[in-house]
Image (cartoon, rainbow, N blue to C red; front, top):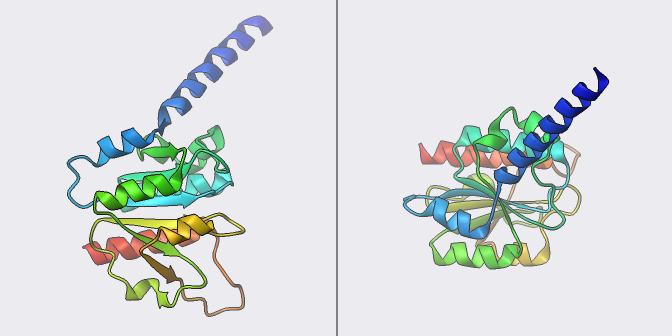
Length: 188
């Protein structure tokens, strides 16, 4: 009996790993996803490392109607079983694109007409002051350090989230929710 159970568990684990591998896509896949999309709506994550955050972000991205979530292959959590569980199925529906060079991908998307709005504590304007209606990629950084320098430099605009309390910033998954749904509000 023990051998049968271990065999079944091994088959289930292989099946889960195969599904996880299919969930991640490449830069070429991203361009194919956007082919024919009139007004792209993307989310760029720069080195988010907590699988719980990624799962929550994918769930929110699905609800907001994001066409794809883009992240680097290095220094970034990928689609794991924890991410899948926390996303409540969104990891199966929202294309998650992992790229080798995030800056190069951003440049390629700019050539396709996408504008980049990054979140930063150093921004002069509030998220609510920016026009988020056109071809858009919202850019959020890692949990502790925020966006890397090159990623921030590739943004067309920087926006801050108003913080009235004593805490300096929000959790990245909460920030993603605020940003995505402000864009949804403006686009309706």
